[in-house]
Image 1 (cartoon, rainbow, N blue to C red):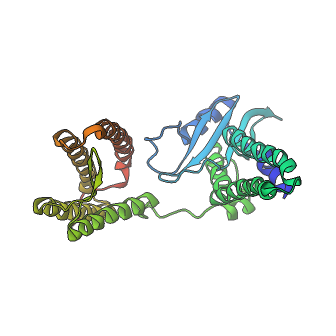
Image 2 (image 1 turned 90 degrees about the vertical axis):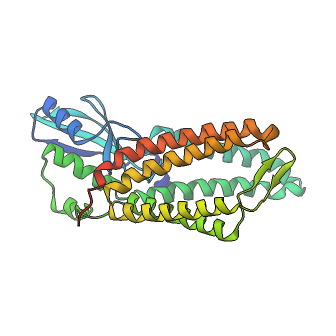
Image 3 (image 1 turned 45 degrees about the horizontal axis):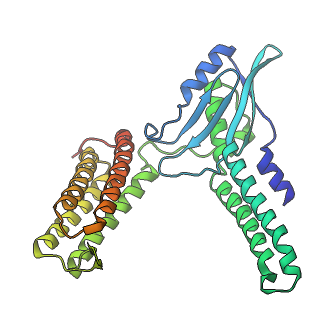
Length: 317
């Protein structure tokens, strides 16, 4: 176990990528094969990070799947025996290392401070076990998230070798992930389809039950029945969400546009409902703050959704 912790903390063994080009061209080729970090411009999986002569830092970014514990390649270019070589390691980012150092340090300190109380045989006898449990939880969390991204080093190695035109050994070829067909649906398509289906079904359930989501009054929250017109609107909204989900699954361009329309309608409804209600009382300021937060989240999602245009196509008969 201690060796595993050492490997996680210190990174993998040094790896080398030999380039068939000069230093300047090698940097330019690797930079062209990767992307600079952006939360919204990454529409499909890509190697993202910084590339320069003195420092290379790359990680694999998969849309709709975040993992701070994924391995990061960190290295630099150098020249040896007339060849340009990129040397580095795969390991955790410094932010994750600092976070885990704080986690494990706090757990160790908690155990040490609770030992005197536990030695007295009082009710705090089991307090050190809580610290040990938190320590084990941190180890398990690190190992689980690292397992989720276990294929990232081979994938990043393939990107680097392709950019530098370095030969690939048979062993490395077997370790590389199989290429996905160009017409395969990206994972985020299935995720967004499922989310739209879930929201559509929730609209139908709410309309059938005839109950709203709770009307906030100054004295508390009440559950009131939907008026007939509102229930009809919920049914129409559910149908639109399910239709949009089908279009997203089939990757129709019209569904991509419909995503913006539904996002805009949802925000307009929230603003109109907030301004037209007279029963909020002291809760109106909370409603305004929630509305601003909702608008911020919708803006982030809209910018990300715009970057997914490349995955959609015009209607085909």
